[in-house]
Each structure stands twice: as C-alpha cells, then as structure tokens.
Length: 282
Image (cartoon, rainbow, N blue to C red; front, side):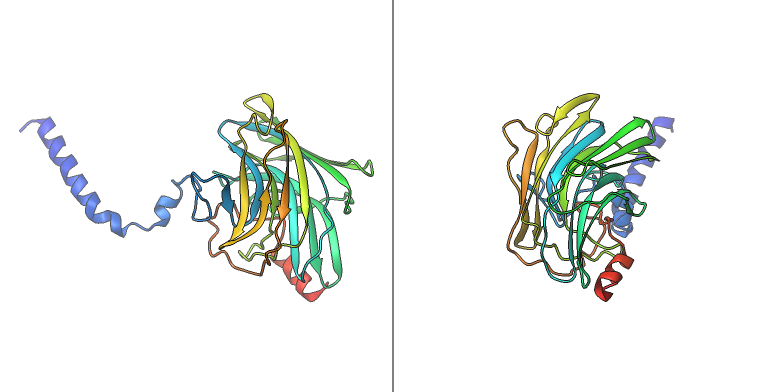
C-alpha cells in the first residue's frame, strides 16, 4: 500500500464528507467570502439599482482621492424625512467606507442643513461649516500616506472652509458620487425628502492617475423601493465629469431593509438618537 494510494483514498473520503456537511454549515460562514453584492443589486443590468443610493460609482483599481462639487438642494417633505449628498472611497464591494458631504433633515422644528464626514464603522461627525440651500460645496477626500486621509470641505458660495486629517485604513476598492436615502444605525430607512435635482461634478485619482468619472469607468446607480423608482441619475455629460440625480414623485416611507448585507452599507450619517430627536421635535 503506497502513499499515493492513501492520499487518493483520503481525498475521496473528504469529498464525500463535504457533500453531506455543506447543508449544515451556517450561511453566514459564506458571507465573508462574497463580493458584497446582494438582492438589492441587479448584476449585469444598466444601471444597477440600490435601496438607498443614486449616482455613480467606479470599481476596479486603487482609488486614493475623490472630489465632488454640488449645489445644496432646497428640500421639502414629510416629518421625518432626509437626504444626503456625498463622495466617498470604499463601500461598494468592501465594508470600509470613508465619505463626506452635506445633508438635510426635516423634523418637527423645521429643516436643517449640515456638512459631515464619516469613516465606517465609526459614527458620522457633523462639522462646523454652515451650508444652506443654494450654496455650492466642494468636498475632497485624499489619502496623504497609507492610513492617513485629508478631508477638505469648501463652501464656494460663502468662502468658508473646513479641513480634517484622520487615520483610516481603506481598501481603496471603489469611488462614489452619491445621493442617499439615510438610515438609522438600527437598520431603519428615513423617508427620502423631495430634493428635486442635484447636479454633481467631480474627478478621482485611480491607480495614481487623475481621471474623470467616465475615464474611471464609473457606472450609474438608480435608487428603487420595490417597483418604485425614487431617484435616477442622468447620463454623464460629454466631458464625463458630471451628472444630475432627479428625485421622482414616488412617496418614500419609514421602512426596515431587513439586513445590513445590502448593496451598500446601511451605516449612514444618521444615528438612532438623530431619529428620536426628529420624532420628538428636539
């Protein structure tokens, strides 16, 4: 009885055992091996769909800087409702995401507008930069050295700015220019307000080269809720560096997506305490 015969027998036995054991392995054991796609994606479709994102994202390559410029929209909506416009790196195929932008929140006290940044899984940080409807805002997120990021916010209308450096280890796996329906850290979607249209322009550094969205291979994402379309991105402009997200007339309601394993991470610039304050009118 030689060694090769024993090895073959052992492999056969292991194969048989695997067939019988696979049905009993918890599904979560495979989750960490997935690409991050979920039922909220439409793989192969154009555009992709998301439960809470509308805009453009680029994957493939290493992304070390992103810039976005938009005009803060004037919003209306029910109490409570909200929206956020942001740029970020990571978060499409990986769990990491560093992002920064502006948001509007409607509660019983009225409508408030803020600028913020967030590095998952950390909480959102509101920054001391006033933003109002009609203000042009530019946000840049750049990796200075591995693990160190510089965040720059510029209110082009008022001339005021804010910058922040922080430590964060990113997969550099994607770049995003997004209009988002916010959610709490308890997996509850806040209704999407009526923001009308948001025009977003920007660029990215991919594999060490500065590129337009088109050059980076960015693709569109439409926000849907069941059969309803909530927000749709336009085609990129002829220069490949800008697009417009348009809010539909479809009503958005409080909902539970049911799982954090979604098209996008459900961590957002919004906490459960924020939601409680909105409902109580603090």
